[in-house]
Length: 303
Image (cartoon, rainbow, N blue to C red; front, side):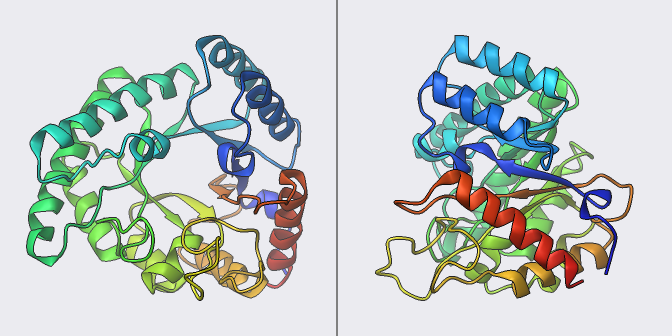
């Protein structure tokens, strides 16, 4: 058994997934405060605030807390149905512009990193062209981010065929993209999420050893893919051990062990590992957050 898990990682959580109903400014700030007042967490990942006044209050709150801040570009892309690798140039540019605006917000919040997703997989016939377009889009995003400061830009592989059906996708393809983007931005990296691996048909060993040289951030989450009629089917991030789902303590243990084996987690290194969990209808956000912490402790004890 290893020592205290906090010696090996900064545990974080995706705020807007854990509290999906925190839409008003008041709820945004209250739930964000709940997370940063919990000293189990050393990092938090956020999206845009509901309004400018809330954003300013959140910025001061985060600054005073000392937690590491990550900013997600996913919501802007999903909400606007934007595609960084669209065959249409105008659509690609629209997606790039949305991310540039989100990067401005990330800097305002004092974020260390900024994550986003690729667009849809267009199918085998146009896939190679789409990969080229994606690389061009990301390079433009990275150049913009570098012109403003040292924000780390991260691409997160999503499912390829199940739910979002993103181009990236498989770990090998993610690495190919990262290799090219690093020619423009050497700090560019990848984020791997445990919840996406079953949908990609990849084990933690496969995904993490493939991406190890580019891995800058990691998520812990769950998915349900056995029953397409289940309301939580796909990339809904149910709590660990949800009936019919893919990830519980054994799978989380394997993920942690592999993160240790590849050197991502190491004592004193302070690498971030964040929960991405979402309450199912009728579930309490605070209850599933507490459950996630218990599951992480239990998995850590088995290493």
